[in-house]
Amino acid sequence: MTPVLEVRDLSYRLPGAGDRHLVTALSFSVAPGETLVLLGRSGSGKTTTLKLINRLLEPTRGEVRLQGEATATLEPYRLRRRIGYVIQEIGLFPHFTVAQNVGLVPRLEGWPPDRIAGRVRELLALVGLDPDEFAERSPRALSGGQRQRVGVARALAADPALLLLDEPFGALDPITRVELQREFRALEGRLGKGMVFVTHDVREGLLLGTRLGLMHEGRLAFLGTAEEFRRSNDPQVKQFMEAA
Ligand SMILES: Nc1ncnc2c1ncn2[C@@H]1O[C@H](COP(=O)(O)OP(=O)(O)OP(=O)(O)O)[C@@H](O)[C@H]1O
Ligand SMILES: [Mg+2]
Image 1 (cartoon, protein in one colour):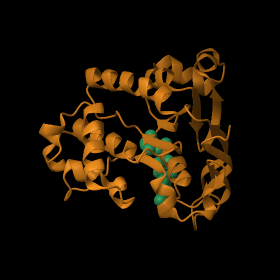
Image 2 (cartoon, protein in one colour):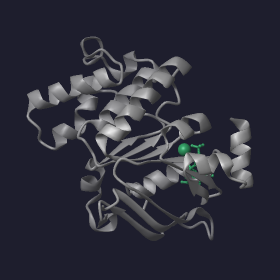
Image 3 (cartoon, protein in one colour):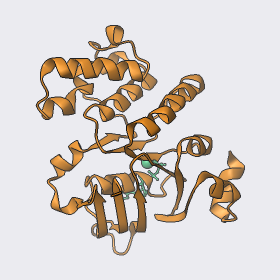
């Protein structure tokens, strides 16, 4: 089966900053139905990696393939419609309603309005926001955690093959967070998508990850299953396990 995502020897050097690499020689792949969790301390290169995957940043070296196609050969805007992205800062459009935000990519893809409306309601319900109450609100009238859930709904809207999630549950209270984690886990198997899920929360990572990657100073210090992560003797991994 073709992986949803293949990353080969990916590096990113800051333009004009001599030899400063933010990401160095990353290689991994994500099969349909798999979630790769990226852990790592603040500044270790997780967000940079996601941006290299959807070409918000252009790799200095290496290759990214989406469903077997080299992303360098795709128009960035076409590429991004095939990738759902939940960014760390949420990034909802403030002048759009919740429904317009969630329906953004389906609209760009030319879906008929009633199909978009149906999909928006379905997704809002999925992330635990009552469509009757929230669809017509402005993002300004939402709490941080509600905004984050709209961001997740928006990323799923056009049924992309790959989802990139950058701490999607960071702003949620622990109870809602556990509820969404459960929903999410059920979704993973059902959707058959590939996901790259960034989190600081080791417990969340162990729950949601088919495999876990630990980034350290721009490199993958560890890549393996949850079981292998728990048992690893790698000093970086041990530090994370002890902190959990
Ligand atoms: N445009 C830039 N110019 C200079 N340094 C940058 C730039 N963008 C990112 N960096 C640096 O690159 C490193 C990696 O950043 P990145 O955002 O990938 O970290 P992260 O692992 O996502 O961290 P966090 O967990 O805090 O979100 C950081 O040290 C950051 O300061
Ligand atoms: Mg980040």
